Length: 413
Image 1 (cartoon, rainbow, N blue to C red):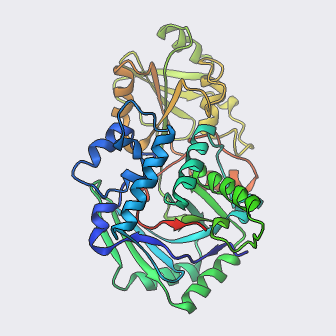
Image 2: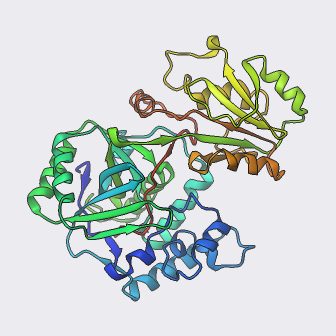
């Protein structure tokens, strides 16, 4: 079973593409998604966040949401809004955000390689989120949210992608968030084989974003394999939808934390306790950390700069030395009683693309009691953790620009 293979992708019809592509399901809440689809009956959010077509009282995880998602998906197929390529292809996918340009390849990645650790993870998943993606895939019998993978930049692959991207694109859309999504379809048999062979020669790939989607794909594959007495390994469920970029084009933003309460302490008590492990300074400005080992904290309408004591940093441990680990082990767990951030409902995570104003908003509204701004995890740190066979704490990285949902989907047998 090859590491990646071409697939017959399901894409928006050319005349429908601008009306279809949408932000990833997990970067908008339900109310934001409802606003985003006004006047857009074919937005892929009707598939990826189908609760927007149900009463607001309905939970995003209610069974009716997956039924509605499948109904909306089938309607898009029936109306010709989505069309499937006739033969297996690779797809060059370029993202442009301001001055940043990333050019990668959409492919079907091997579940077997993922299960064996050749496609390496760097985060734990949250059980409820993973279950949600399993239900979504099963309801649609398709993978519609791509897993964002990374490969070590490769002369052969990068050269082919650059050559293809010199031609006329099959899709070129500026989304309403300003990010440009451009797609070229690779059908040439020699190019398909060269790409497949080049990836097969690689030691590994890395999951950058989409751990819940890749974990869910693995679970769906295991379930379908068990239910298929004629299983031969070539079925489409043995692969998962991915877009793979070279490591030297990645852009990681901070992934910040907000906590609902102070674990019974007053604000002054919390600041005093933090001072046992961090240098604490009141700041006149919002704190956006500029180096590892530093953090911002927003509490009671005030910003603080926190610097962890150097003796608490285990420099030789690729996981424990991460800022997300240092905050968890020296503040969130011992002081705020956030024992397992994957499951604790008292903590939430805010992508850096939303800015520090979003942290202030969440705290000032009374929804949360305290917020922490982070220094971004580096790509080198991510790969070091994955190569060591370990994983990061949840929500350690926020990649930008984001892939769009609806650009290309992978139908399952």
